[in-house]
Length: 633
Ligand SMILES: [Zn+2]
Ligand SMILES: [Zn+2]
Image (cartoon, protein in one colour):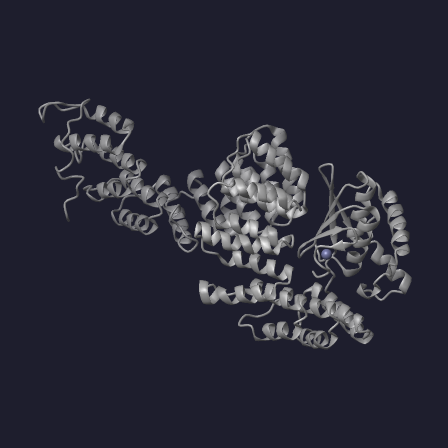
C-alpha cells in the first residue's frame, strides 16, 4: 500500500506549542492529546497534533485506540473526508467503533458505495455490528438495499432499537414503502420525533393527509420540520385551506418559530386559492420575523402575488430578489403570461439570457409559449417552439404542444393545430384535446370538432371535461343526437362532471361556492343579488347562452342553472359584501364557461367594478364590459 501522508513523517514539522517543544523525550499525556483533538479549531491545528502523535508512535498504540478514533472524527468534522477515511484504511485490526465511525463518515458524505464496502469488510472480520453501525449504514441505503440491511438488523436482534427503527422508517418512508415503514413504526416502543416525522412525510407524499394529520396530532413534541412536512403535505395535495389553518395554529402556539420552508409551503397554499390578503400578511410576517428572503422565499412570493392577481407586487418582489436563479425568472415569466402581458414575458425571456446568461429550461418555455398563446403571437410562438429542440436541445413535452395548439386554435388555424396533435411523437392527453375542441367551439368549426369528437369517443377517454366539451360541440352544432350519445357514454362509464368551485376572499377569509350552493350564511342576500343582477344585465341586451348547459333541461330551467354557476354566486357575494366600486377577485377551479364570461363582462360594465377572475387556464381582467383575454381562453 502506498504510504499515506497521514502516517508518513512528512507532516508539518511545526511544533505544537501547547504539547511539546522538545522531541520524543517529552511524552505528552495521551488524555491531553485526546482533549486537544476535540478542541482543534482548524485542519492545520489537527495536522500538528496528528504529527505529534505520530512522532511519539501513539497513533496505532494498542493502549490508545481512542486517539485514532478521535482523529478520524475530527478530520471528518473539518470536512477532510478523504483524510478521515485514509486514517481508517491504515488502521491495523480496526475495532467496532472505528468501523462504525468510518461507515458513518462515508454515509453522511454521500459515499454510499464506500460505506457498503466498509460494512461488508466489518461483517467479514467477524465483528458484531451494533445499533450505531446500523443507523450509520441505513443512511446509505436505497430502497433496493434496505431489505437486506433490515434482515441483518433482525438477525442481530436489533429490530426494536429506537435508533435502528428510526433509520428503517426513514429509508422506507423516503422510498414510498408506506406499509413497510408503518410496520416498523408500529412496533417501536418509543417513537422519536425523527421517526414520526418520517412517517408523516411518507403519508403526505402519498396524498394520505388524514393519516398524516392523525399521527401529527398524536405527537407529544413537534419541531418545525414536522410542522413543515404537514403544512406542505396539505398544500401539495389539494388541501390549501387546511394548510393555512395549520399555519395559523402554529402561530397561535408561539413555538416553534416558522422558517423559510414553512412560509414557502404556506404561500403555495395561498396561491392555490387566491388568498391575496393572507399572502400579503405572510409577506409582512416574513419581514417582521427576519425570515431570510432568499431566492426560494422570493420565488414563492412572486408566484403567490401573480397567481393571486397582483402582478405589480410580483414584479416588485422580483426586482428585489437577490441572486435570481432560473426558477425565479420562470415564475416571473409565467406571471406575465398568466395575466396576458405577453410582450413583457418575451422581453424578460430575452433579458434573462442576455443579462444573466442563464439557460432556459423546459419550464421557461412553458411560460414563454403560454405568453405567445395568450397574446395570439403566432410567428413568435412557432419560432420559439421550433428553437427549443434546434437551439436548446430541449424536447418539447405535452405542455409545450398544448401552448402551441392553443395558440394556433386561438387564431383559427384549426387544421394546423389538429394536424400537429395527430402527428405528435407523444400521445395527446385530455388537456390537449380539450384545447383543440375549445378552439373548434370558439370558431364554430363543427366539422373538425365532430371529427375529433368521433375519434375521442372511440378512444375511451375518462376525462369529464372532454365529455362536457364534446357535448357542447354537438349542442352548438344543433346535433342533439350527438349530445344524447355523449351523455349516455358518460352514464355508462360512470363519469361525473367535475364540480365547479369558485372562491372569493373577503376580510382575510376565503368563501367557497359550488353551483346552486345554499350553504353560505348570507345565502338569501346572495340570491337576491343574483336576481337583481340578472334583471339588469337582461336590460343590457343579454341573452343566456343555453347551449353550454349539458343537462337535458327545459329552456327556463337551463337559464336558471346557468344563473347559479359557482362564479356567479362568488361575484354576487362580492357585490354585497364590499364597498361599491372596489375590485373583486374570483378564483375558479375549472375554465369559466362562455355564458358566465359574457355575464361577468356585463356586470363589470353595469357596476363599474374591475373583476379579476382566475380560471384553470388564465387570468381574466374584466373592465367596463370587456375582458383582457379578448374572449379567448
Ligand atoms: Zn358559468
Ligand atoms: Zn376573459
